[in-house]
Amino acid sequence: MHLDKFIPIFQDLLQRDEPVFATDTLADMEEWDSLAIMALIAWFDKNCNLHLTFPDCKALRTVADVAALAKIRA
Amino acid sequence: MFQGKDVILVTGASSGIGRATALLCNRAGATVIASGRNTAALQTLGDICAAPDRLHAEPYDLCADLNNLPVWIQDLRRRYGKLRGMAFCAGQTWNLPMSQYSPETANQAFAICCHAPLMAARGFCDRRNNTGQGAALVFIAAAAALDPNPAQGVYGAAKAALVAGARCLSKEVAGRGIRVNCISPGLVQTPMMEETVRQLGREFLEQEAPLYPLGFGNAEDVAHLAAFLLSDAARWISGQNVPLTGGR
Ligand SMILES: NC(=O)c1ccc[n+]([C@@H]2O[C@H](COP(=O)([O-])OP(=O)(O)OC[C@H]3O[C@@H](n4cnc5c(N)ncnc54)[C@H](OP(=O)(O)O)[C@@H]3O)[C@@H](O)[C@H]2O)c1
Image (cartoon, helix red, strand yellow):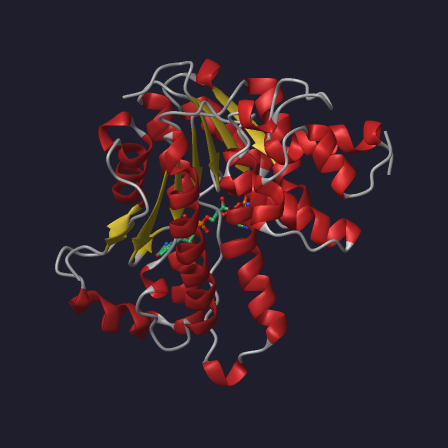
């Protein structure tokens, strides 16, 4: 999947009105909470067969890091 | 109780408890999106409600495509603005002994009694679709969720699943100031109860009547509690399943 395709999916997972950019810092987004992390884990599990853990996700810094984890190409 | 900017979605608004809830919320000042399948019944609401300019009929079959319910809610938000409340009153009952339990029938009951309300809630609770702090959800569950009579096993199981889902949801959204509650009525005199009497005969009512010290309920009895739970007067109540059973 291309990054351009992943960004709106990620925005949807965060249930966020404002646009999301690859360079955005996760910690700065109020929507990036434990429930959003669990939703992201479920999404990767279902769509990428990738079994992330909570600590994996907590260690991520930016939206680009999330994409990189799923080997999403920029 | 409410202001015109408070948009409240009421499902099951074409009949019984949902109809009474839609009319009461409209009378109490809210803008009401009244949903059901029976278009003609929804349209009559506009003729009898207190403020027709604040009542919008939205015919929709909640079980036609359960996965689409969050998209439907998103579409309502686009057209009417962010939702302040949802009273999920749509439902159907099943009178079936456990000897006749089957996954097929249970799936039908779960579709309208559990999946539809929880998928609609998924749409409502999306941060983009509700007003945040002060927004509230009310589900009409049933006394059968807690203590089903014989032949209420399928219906009771589906409503019990709804109550559990709602309780979980209340904890997930509490941090955003959103409240989630269930009401579990006993017998309420609506077309649904008439259908039960038609199926089980008048002896059913004769057996049940002595169990209700305050008599059977009416739709307005439930609507008053639903409107209260949606309002700020209930700001400290969430995650509850309130039995409403006329002293039973
Ligand atoms: N009455 C009681 O004794 C009693 C007791 C405990 C709990 N409850 C619960 O209270 C709620 C309201 O019941 P009620 O007594 O008011 O029943 P009702 O008069 O039969 O009304 C049921 C409502 O649900 C709607 N509905 C059913 N299936 C639907 C679907 N697939 N899509 C959209 N709308 C649908 C109906 O819409 P249309 O008519 O337009 O199709 C109708 O507006 C239900 O959840 C019921 O389980 C009732």
